[in-house]
Image (cartoon, rainbow, N blue to C red; front, side, top):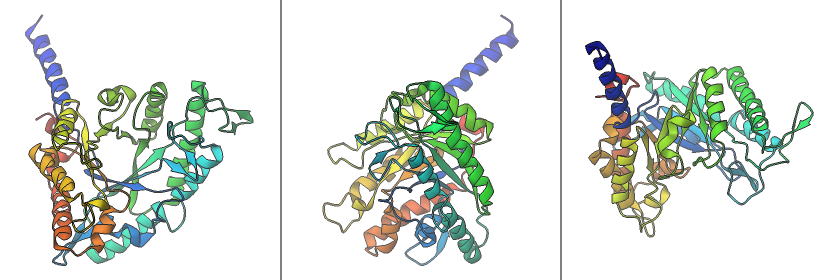
Length: 358
């Protein structure tokens, strides 16, 4: 083998090793999960987005916060959008209702767009474009009663029928987003809401091709060691965030966080930060220390410096902390907000292959 071929082979192997041994970065540095659409969720009016679009510190100064917003839902009115929740499967009319909720005037996307506009009037241009990621609802194999397309009842045991349903849904999603003409948000990605890949692996690859043809990314957030988490690229995803699932169970040791970070790094994944209102310092049986453990573990493992991040905060975590004035509550949420804000200046978090492979 020639020296040139040897060098090329070495470069390829080096690049592969780099991808497998570094956290994933993306065009969105900090992606907050917005649970929206179900009847049991907040309305998500303009004012409800303020603690997510900006953060006001204990000393009164204010800055921009998240640069990305993921809108997602699992259930609504007793119907399930993903398998194994022990509810009847959502049907075509339920899918259509979910889209109506996402694009409802004065709420959700429209409210976020207007919230950003209002904050711009106060703070000036943020210097970055706010991005949104919207959910694709996965057809559930075994369902026979989803509904009809072009006068024909679909059978979700048939892969082509599942593809047809997904394309019908995504076509409406892209069309409605484009027609709304939002001024302050752009559609950056499509999210696969099922957190494991026991089913629909072939469909996922088709969805990947379909959304890539629309010019956006394909996003996944598998739970800790979920089936297929380490094969996320095989399913067509551009980025996958690994969930530590540590915050929710006090019997899980803090070492889980280090393990989750290491697995993410080994598999070229990003990571999810997790907390909710139970982390309030002055609440009964507080999980404050578990939230603090995430911050310390992510600092210890270089996550804040090297990885894109998704944030699960229980649907209202940042809003709840914004209303609480206990010094310890202000201390930890200001600390997390300061980290998020400082990450915007970190050029290593831009999606550049050379930076990723350092």
